[in-house]
Every structure is written in C-alpha cells, then in structure tokens.
Image 1 (spheres, rainbow, N blue to C red):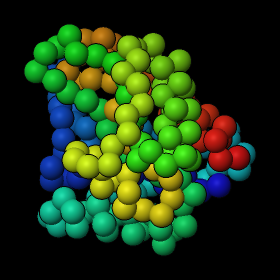
Image 2: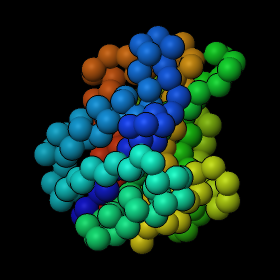
Image 3: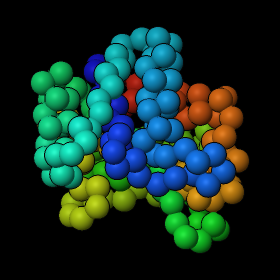
Length: 184
C-alpha cells in the first residue's frame, strides 16, 4: 500500500511555533515525515511518499495541487501532519480529523489510538470535518485521508512528549502501525 505523507503548511507560511525550540509546524513535521519514511522499512507492504505544499499559490490552490500529486502517485491513504497551538498553555491533547467516510474514519480511529499510546497525552478524539479549517485536506484527494494534530506545541505537556528523538520516532511508528493495521 502507498501512504502519502503531506507536510502541513509550507516553507513561507510555516504554521504554529513551538516556544520551547522555536521550531515551526512545517519544520518539525518535515523532520517527522523523513523519519516516517525511514521507519517504513520495518513495515512490510507500506511504501511512503512525501509531499509538500507549494508556497505562494494561496490555500485552495496549494491543497488542490498537493492532493493532485498524491492522486497521480496513486496513494492508497494520505496523512497530513500538523500540531496544535493555543494561547492557553494548559491546552493539551491529541486529535485526528477525518472526512467521515467509512475508511477515513477507521483510519482516524487507528491513528488516534496509536498516537495516544505513543505520546500519552489527553484524548481529544476523532473529529469529522466537512467544512472549514482542514476540510479541504480531507476531501481533495481520491484516497482516504486523515489530518493529525498529535500535540499542542504551545503546551509544556505536548513539548515534553515530543522533544526527544525517540519520542518523535515513537510518533512516526504510531502513524505507520495505524496505517499498516487499516490498509495492509
């Protein structure tokens, strides 16, 4: 099966910033994407492709272009990487967005379970999103899609759960375990 990893945001509009490291969503998730690609060797039957949104096109065109690329690659599933941020540093937890289709929801549930086990953060659940923020990423491609928000970069709890290499590797493996369990 072919898993398309889409890195959220882009080189110009990099998303939220972790106050502990100064690293943006785009930078942190670019590292996570490469780690997922490396770890995939331990998951027979799963091949990973990395996809990045092109800066300067505007949000709608960016999404249409990158998910067109995942379709041309013939992805069997897509997982878009993000992390949350909030002005309240006590906001914490893990959540996964789904379009609500049967397979997308099953994938979101598997991702949520594996990420909770890997990070040990509060369960914010799976959310079905058909309109508004994140919805275009869930409905623009052919393949079942999920958008993950594994932690709050603004939260000391989220930072502590993801600031070490082995913790990022555990998250990468969680994404691959979920993918393998649903699609292989």
